[in-house]
Amino acid sequence: MNQQELIAMLGRISKIMEINRDYLIELDSVVGDSDLGLTMSDGFRSAYDSVSDGMEPDLGKLLYKAGKTMGNKVPSTMGTLMAAGLMRAGKVLKGKTELTDQDVVSLFQAYQDGVADLGKAKPGEKTFLDGFLPGIDALAAGLNAGISLEMAFQEAADAAWAGFENTTTMVAVHGRAATRGEASRVLKDPGAAVGALIMKAAANR
Image (spheres, rainbow, N blue to C red):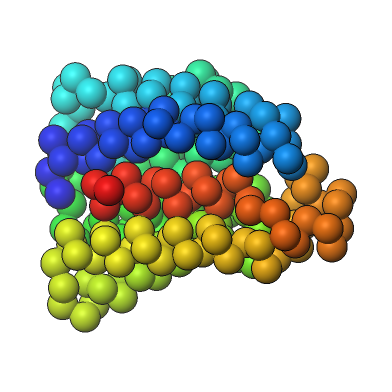
């Protein structure tokens, strides 16, 4: 993945958050304060806009800049978490001007680590991770099996969406949804939807 392709991926993530803004607002209205769609569309658009000129050849620095810009633009809980993911990925990939397929996996793994560390969340706790980590696992498994990055992303997108859908089997541990206890189990997690949408955008779907 070269610089142009990475910037294009960030652009697709920005676009998919804009397209799904109302859907995220709807999901968040049940368990949050209904601003997730606005936060994600505004935040990822600012991240993309900050690097879309292609002036930064270092892909790690590019991702870090995108994350820092997003954090400043949408300093909400979820905005800060998504920014932390971008910034962690930037630190891991600093110095690279081209990404191998395994570097792309490292990008997403680092993104997940940044979110998990800041949010103190684990898989199965009905969060962003449950719509994101299944995608990373599928991406890595596909590449290890020898399929193309494009095909691996398609499998990752399917796995991530299934992970999001599977949050209806989980009891929320974090945020306002956790106050519902067992009643939170039937709800789809809006954060996991964001994770699944990122994977869908990465797969260009």
